[in-house]
Each structure stands twice: as structure tokens, then as C-alpha cells.
Length: 286
Ligand SMILES: [Zn+2]
Image 1 (cartoon, rainbow, N blue to C red):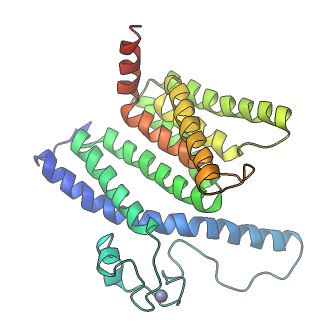
Image 2: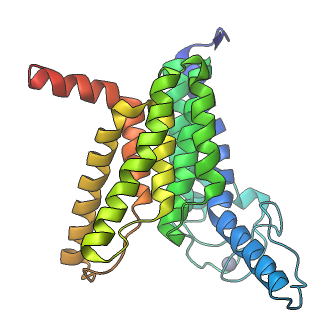
Image 3: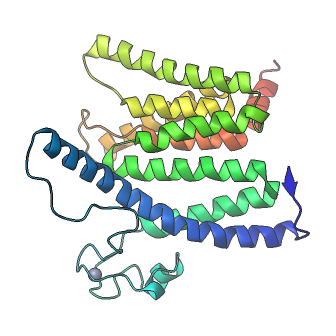
């Protein structure tokens, strides 16, 4: 299913880039606001359950209140809200109080833009592009939230699992049977590691959000890709963890979120997994 536009791949990629930059602005809002919103709901529910006075302030949503500088509280002007460009123009500082703005914002926008350009260039306006963008953007948001809050919200991981199964209902990426087994095996494999680790060391090495994320990745790319995702994510996670201890003086007990490694390894396996697998098999002449 490809929607023919008659445009050259390069023009499509440029349109995709602009579209992706704008989506990136929205993803930044989700990364910042979704945890606040969840916390807000949780506090309201807890107070209600305990029979305490309800909170009188307006609930936080994705659209309200309007974006403000966290330092001076001044609303961000529309002309200062242009993806990447505003950040460069303002030299990474708030237009009102010149407090530094996190590099995370333009980075997310840039990655979002490049991701859209990449898929549109490769697959045009197709079902593959549409679903690939849903997966990529979800992984980007999960990475951002987990880095800041050490949390992989069910509100993203669970729909991601179902959408993956839905995409593969017609075999967009893998046959449905491989997707279903992938979802089950993804959850169970990390769940098993979690309990073994807990029984041996008495510590909890990761969270339930990690199991759900790997289940979702299995639903998108089938069970065959799971070993690669686990190997890649633990290898990179171990390198970053050890580097943190050696160079940044982190304590051995300090926790690092595993979700970003899972998400990045998942994306690499999603895009280049087949090539990596066939290259690996060729090296060993299997
Ligand atoms: Zn400011």
C-alpha cells in the first residue's frame, strides 16, 4: 500500500524533515508533560482515596498551561518556538531571562526530523513509513521520559504493543504468529532475568516497564530479533554503566535507566536487524 505522490524521494525527504521537526516539538511537550500529568492524576486520586481536600489548581494537560521558561516563567513566544532554528538563533538561551535551555529540546526535534526524512526517503508515503514513525517516535519519547524520570509509562508501552500487533495483522513487518510469540517472549525473557537476579542478589535490576517495552518490540519485529535487542542493550548499558563509574565517579549502586538502551537497541534492530543478522551469519558461514 503506497500512496503515489509523483514527487522525487529527495523532495519527499525534505517534506518529511520539516514534518518531523514539527512533530519533534510536540514530542518535547509529551516528554516534559506526560510524567507531570501522571503525577498530578496520581496525587488527585490518592487524596480522593484518603478523603483529603481535593487539589484546587487546574489539572496539568499536554496543552495547558502554555509553555513557559522554567526559570523566569515567561510564556514562550511563537517565534521562539520554531524547531531547532529558535534554539540556534537564541544561542540556547531563554529570550526573556537568558537562562540556558536544555540541549535536549533541539536534539529531540532534530532526531524526529531525521527519522521522518529517513523513512519517507526509503519507503515513500506507505503503511511501512506510517507505522515505522509511530514506533520510532514512541521510542524517542520513552527514552526521553526514562532518562529524566526513570519511568516507562504504561500509557505508551501498552498501546505500542497493541499497535505493533495491529501492524502485523497484515504482516507489515513480520508474520502475525512471529509478532505474537515476540510479544510473549519479550515480556517473559526479561521477567525471568529480573527474578533470577532478584533471587541471587536480593536487588531489583530493572522495572516492569522494561518488560513491557521488550514485549512491544517483540510485537513489532518478531521473536527472532529479541536476542539481538537484549545483547545490544545490555552491552551498551554495561559500557555506559562502567564508564559512569570510572569517569563520572558514580557509585556502583547508582541506578541507570535501562529503558533508553532497550529503546535504542530496539530501533537499531528494527531498521538494520535483518542486515546485521545476515552479515553475522555470513561471517560464520552458517
Ligand atoms: Zn526565562
